[in-house]
Image 1 (cartoon, rainbow, N blue to C red):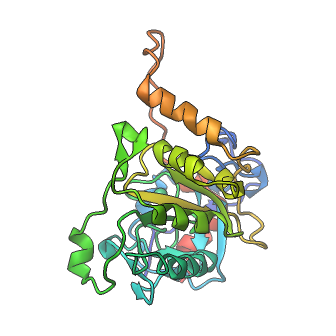
Image 2 (cartoon, helix red, strand yellow):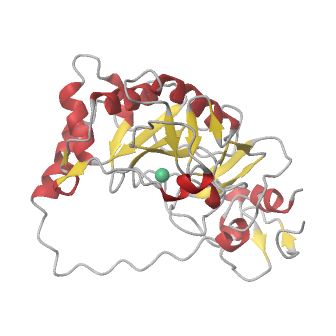
Image 3 (tube, rainbow, N blue to C red):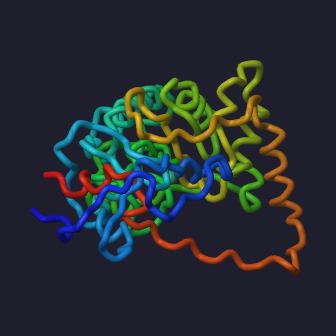
Length: 311
Ligand SMILES: [Zn+2]
């Protein structure tokens, strides 16, 4: 199957003109900067890379490797998260986003087994990972591009025999109150225990969750708080939490995000909550941020062209 039109490629070492946003600026979608030597010159039009990666149905038959950053990269040799396992179900199968680096699949198997020990949790309902070859998605998500991000539903699974149709139609539940400043009555100790188990896993770099949940966990954590450092407040993330793994050892062009600042991050989370409850007045001089241009193959690590073109 040919997955994209033949491109005339010329590898340019350090010659590509465009440059990426600096890393480390945002907690979430950072780490897209790449060494210039890995840039690719593509003599075709700057076609949006999501139109190239989005329609591809199967992973490449290459050795597994994550190339680039969480929000600008791709994935070779992806592994499929089985649609149903002993302690999980993949949701929204029609999206075909249950693909990840083998390290991510291993992690999800480990975490779901731990979740299944929580009362009322048969395991985990798992949302989007990555597309079969990673890359920018046709809709949603700036990140999830290199097979190291996963969305995990907040809804406690009562059963793990949902049909494909049920997995399309069932919805997760929101955990937030007051715009995310607080958790609501659906939040349980088990949610914290599962997020704690995820954050305590050495493979994990960061977890994103709405600010009120972080503050609640800061209150309830007690003396054992080191794991809180990896739990970062972010917009959204009240129907699911988002786990991001660190680059697997040996994936040499995978771009890690700068580690979270030292400490438990609880003061920072309180700042988020304050800004939700008392939003600063709009800046009359603020300029609207122009929309980001779509990522093209030329913006991505050179290896992504071969990931796309490989059998
Ligand atoms: Zn996500």
